[in-house]
Length: 498
Ligand code: NDP
Image 1 (spheres, rainbow, N blue to C red):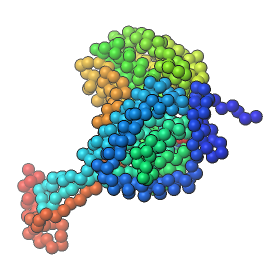
Image 2 (image 1 turned 120 degrees about the horizontal axis):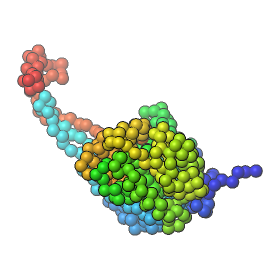
Image 3 (image 1 turned 135 degrees about the horizontal axis):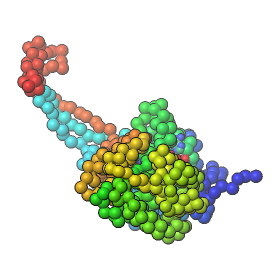
């Protein structure tokens, strides 16, 4: 007897990956599965396409990318419908996700030349007879491996920036969202029909592993920390550089002078949007003693109002059915260790849904505080001081984002969070700010997407010097004389020795 798989579980049939809705089990679409040799061929084709694409220059690429942006904006309802059908994401959330992706395509297209283009840089006195030139050249072919939780925003954070920098991209979408991934590739092909500048390879994890070994010049991975380690190990075999955007366990700190209504509203959004399946989601909150009780009441009141269901609800189904067990385990463990569910609890997990759960007084060793839960759950713990909140927030190996609510010291507290990003008096905002880099520290990975750093991540610095005159202090030649060296030493002592 074959086991009945829960709705939303991807299956492979006749060399095709079949994607289904986690809410209804209805088929969202099917895509061909790539064998390792197909992945290699895709990278070869991309290499040729990439040369053509790089040859378009910044102006030509900007024009194509802006056309793609226009197309994404015009068809956002169609794409959002697909995201809903495939991953269960509420349509409103899908639309907001697409808006942020469109913003990133626009910024990357408009700013690539300014950030990466050729420029003169100043020379220094010791090499005054040389001019210096810097530019950032594309790597060639970039492999992008994406997760399912933000199947548009997340891969586009790498894809748009890699394309704007002049690379071709071979994209492996998550097995849970291949149809949305293919839609992105097909829509790009409408504005760039000449060559396969952006292609997709589909399948399970082994296809991602094959992409790491298929000769790409850089690999941009977004997904769990465990898989990030495998990706890095595979890429190490060929010294392929990697960008790793991995998991998180972001904390919010609520200081005594915070606007508690605003803090509670943003906390519930940060913790429960997309059913909590957000790498930069708020999974833990630390509120200082004087405001703790009021903050918890306001969070519970707001989270308790959220609707859960397949259509037009605030919270949709959990996309990856196996995650439901993780969410249940974290809640049960928190309660068994003495935590108290002030909303929801172990019974809040009703497949394929998880209802909002707010836990207080959960020991810091509990899985609900230490591990990524990826559900609409939140722990809120009482702290005496902001320093204690920071010590607890910074105690985990993860360090992706975070949030601080307060007035007088809020920015200073945000700067002390051990994370790549932080929002003050809001949550998740940094992700949509295309001028800012996005990425983590520690087990949340390294490298940056978005912003100028995100463009530079997909290009390599090329440095050129050019002689513009005779050397006054010749030193890097066998024709130098002892007097030349003595003059050099004297000049350096004058310049730097004081
Ligand atoms: P996974 O790590 O399970 O998968 C990520 C991608 O890697 C998928 O496309 C997956 O393919 C692929 N993959 C699986 N095994 C391998 C392998 N051995 N070699 C190469 N690729 C492989 O993550 P999820 O898809 O479950 O995504 C959720 C995770 O992503 C969470 O931890 C979340 O925090 C993190 N994330 C991080 C973000 C960030 O910017 N830092 C943003 C969004 C999510 P398949 O699906 O076919 O198994």
